Image (cartoon, rainbow, N blue to C red):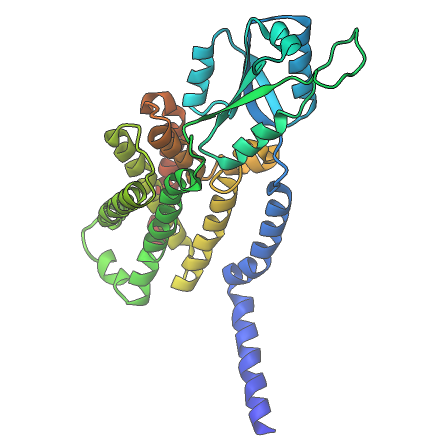
Length: 366
């Protein structure tokens, strides 16, 4: 009986501590609620609204009907018509579209004679899911208005797999995995940095030194930059030699993008460390960032297939922009200047997070 009383006393004490710890209590309730609502709406294996552009050299009634039929499927979101295949390829290279449609000038004759594919679907092979969607589109029929439906009048579509002709999943996974690993390790390392100093009693010593707040923050960040670069080299090297993942772009551009991404994650980690009061809370906040980053950034599911609200949330996550940078540079060989908007987004997140971290730490010192 006395043992039960002591157990219930400890339980009552723990509940009281949880009630006073508002951050932990908020995460207990908020994490499952937000994750359920976010991912229940955002994760959808029925991919739709993929960014698409097309070239219509035939410009005939049948070709226009084809475009209309494809648009009606809602699988593709045809955003623009371009004038040449080269322009279509350029949009694919910078990741502006996931699917390209090329309709040749003899489209009508090919449909009638059925001696060759009537058109080409250009698919971004860096994501195997997109290849599957392109294959589904080949079943879309186009028929003559003046004739009843007849066997053999379906349009023959040829799917061209860009950037991943062997259709290997590792080609898509490895560049994205770089960002996931860096997000997890960089944010965790720095999220516990300030909290660890406080728990060990070293924060008071730092306060009494002439070091300034920005100097302390930058001093905390710089050592982990080298750790992040080591992880980058390990993942890309193993990906290249174990899984034959090609690196088509410039190593210098990969380095620049990775440095900015590492600095952004470290800044977020520092911000978390100024909010959390214990290392456990800092780890919880890191998990709160990591799971949405993995599921909403395009690492696991095509970005265009998610609802608009989920896409807007994903645009705030650094991993979303880094995935586009890595897949663009590593797999498509894209010049980093063509991806300047992704670099600018990362820089903006880094500056905001670092500014808030410095302001909150200065307030704590006051």
